[in-house]
Each structure stands twice: as C-alpha cells, then as structure tokens.
Image (cartoon, rainbow, N blue to C red):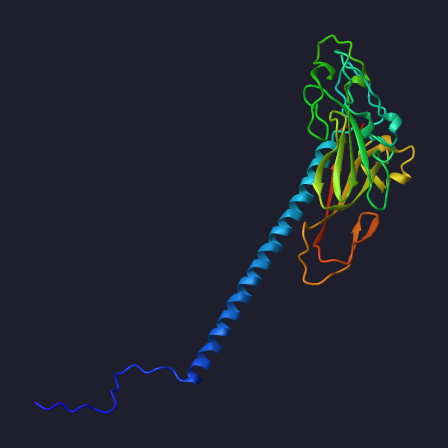
Length: 283
C-alpha cells in the first residue's frame, strides 16, 4: 500500500501571528481596565456609604442623648422637695453641691462645671446645661451614671430628711475638639457623646401666656428673665464624616437655626441634623 503525504497538513496546530497577538493584548487590556474601573468605583461607593452611615449614626446618637436628657429639665417629684428654681442652668452659681443622707457628695466633680459649660450662645457652638431631681424613676445624668439611692427623693409615704439640693442632677453639653461632650454631676470625668460634631446651636421656645404654646424662639443671649417660660428647645448640629470622601475639595455654608456656619474647604462630607425637644415639666 502506498501512502501519499501532503506537504501541508490542515489539522496541524499553527501559532498566532504578531498582529493577532497585538489585537488580543489590546482587547485584554480594555477588559482589564474596565474591570479595574468597576472595582474601584464599587469600592469608593462602598466607602462613601460607610462614611455616610457613620455620619448619620453620630448625628442620631447625639440628638437622642441630648433629647432624652434635656426633656427632663425641671423634673420635680410630687413630694418632699421644692420646685427647681433653675431648670436650665445659665450661671455656675446655680450648680449647688449637696450632701446625701450618708454624707456623700451629690456632685462628683464640681470642676467639670465651668463658666463655659453652662447655657451660652456661641457662633462656634452653643452650650446647654439642665437640672432635674433624681428619684426611683429618674436618677441618671447625661453620662448614664446614677444618683446614689441615699440621695434620691424617697417614695410617697416615706419620711426623709433629704434636702432638696441633695437630690438635684446636673447635665451639661458642649463641644470640644470636634466632639460633643457631656459633664454629668454623677461622673468624675467628661464623657464623649459623639465625634466629628463641628457645631451645635439651640433656640428656646418661649410661651406667650399660661399655656405651653410657643410664641417665639430666642437664642441664649436674648433669654434674660425668660428661662422659666421655656417650653421647648430646638437643636441643630453640623456633623462631619470621619474621613475625606469627596473627589474634590468643596466649601459650603450651612444653616443651623439662627447661625450660618461656613465649613472648611476640604473633601469631608457634612450634614445638618435638627430636632425639637419638648420640655415635659413646664408649668
């Protein structure tokens, strides 16, 4: 049998030409670039979402703690104590040290309450301090520390020699180094409430008559002689992201109640959070 071999075998594997290799490399490069761009875009979107989530959590937490503390301003149990003369503290002289029935101090560290940590109006960040009595139902300051049982207003029907000033709890909110902090009468040190808070402003709702209807809102600088007529408090805070997230630096002006706040020219994300706190103990 005779076999005839063809000079060329159509089934034999052949290599790519230089042109085919170049075309394949260009196509692969385009695909790789697209995948990298998509990955980086997705990663940046994820970082932006995380930063926005942190920003919103800080804003909500700050307003929640301020609201839960301030709404009790002026709280007075129905027996054994006199009505608080100052529920909103605008003078350090109104913060009075007392003694419990076991002779312990009601204010753990009076040095925490300075002239700049009472209720003041400030373009760079207002401060607010409030007072209320402590009993078996309400006994913690803004840091969460509790008033000793020996200091609390006793239940109905209990005979007690506790002085009124011995049962008062004080809480003061202020800004320091872009953090919202609290000075509580039951804590020896300051407590950080929320970070990356750049400004905070308050307005005080004044009632017009003997009801709790707000006639107007004023800042602390215009409240002389009107503190006992406050029925609600508006609060606005400017919160910043923990890290820069914007592609380019941006300078903006934000409205916080009666103040215009100009933020720095940077790449941080910012947002304003507002709330109105209804004071429960007003009449």
